[in-house]
Every structure is written in C-alpha cells, then in structure tokens.
Image 1: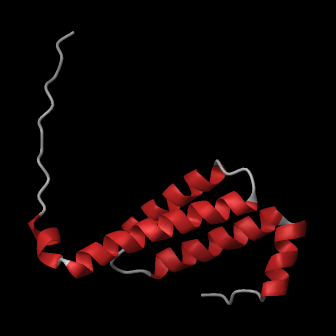
Image 2: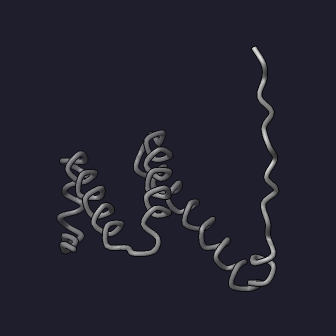
Length: 103
C-alpha cells in the first residue's frame, strides 16, 4: 500500500484540489479493501455507505461529523459484542416468507 502524504500536502490538496484528495482517499480505501482477506465484502459495503452519506454533506465539517458518527456506531456495536458475546451468538433472524400477489 502506498504511503499517505504528509499533513501539509493533504491540507493543500483539501484547499486547492479537493477532487484530487477525494481520488486519493478512494484509491487508498480500495487498496486497503483489496488487501483484506476475510472482510472484503463487508468493507466494500461500509465504504459504499460512507460515500453515499458523505455525498449529501454540504461542507468538510459536516463530512467529519458524519464520519465520526459512523465510526462511533461501529465501535459501539463491536463493544457490545465484546462485552456480551453469548448474547450476540444467540441472535437469530426470523425469515418471513413473502407471498406472491396474483395479477
């Protein structure tokens, strides 16, 4: 995986070439996801969800808040699993069959 540019370079990109910073972020995310063996599909879904939510943001501060909210939610769910793994293992989804409508 390529090295992350220094802070000053990232700041300059954010101020002068935000589209280039976005493409760097996407390239680094794609590389990280490609390197994952067991979580690749889940990471793709999280990345897609993040991109969809960030696309609705109006400014960089809003993007930061959305990212922090998503990370907190993931950490909270991970903490609940670590604190009570038996409860997590006992969870079962109820599958409800859908009935077809006749036309």
